Amino acid sequence: MSIGSLKPKSDMGGHGHEPPYKVPHYSQFQTKGIPQLEELEQALAKKGLRDPWIRNEAWRYHPGFGTRGLRARKLFFRGFPLGLALTVATVAITELAGGKDDHDHGHGDEHH
Image (cartoon, rainbow, N blue to C red; front, side):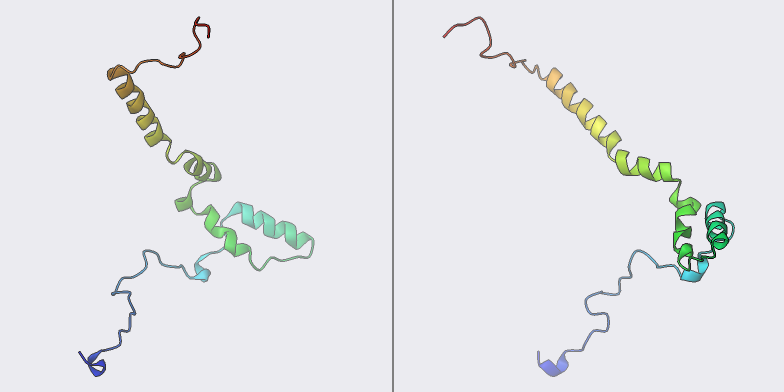
């Protein structure tokens, strides 16, 4: 194979795969219709202020992202069902296998 026969790839290792996400256009996020953000805008306006970046918080109130409590529950308890199932399985297997309770070795009535 000669160097002249190599064709440059335009996708440079991407092999035609697209990213699994699409970044939404900024204009689709509006504060209108979101009571918390509208209230914040009004409070700022009373003080003569305006936050040009407030729309960046609009995604947090989209129903697809859930409530703050739901997001916290997902964060802290994501692996809980699997962990509980594995714990129960481990205890059951240990009990069925006749696991001995050797936790008191060396602490009996024996004197040295």
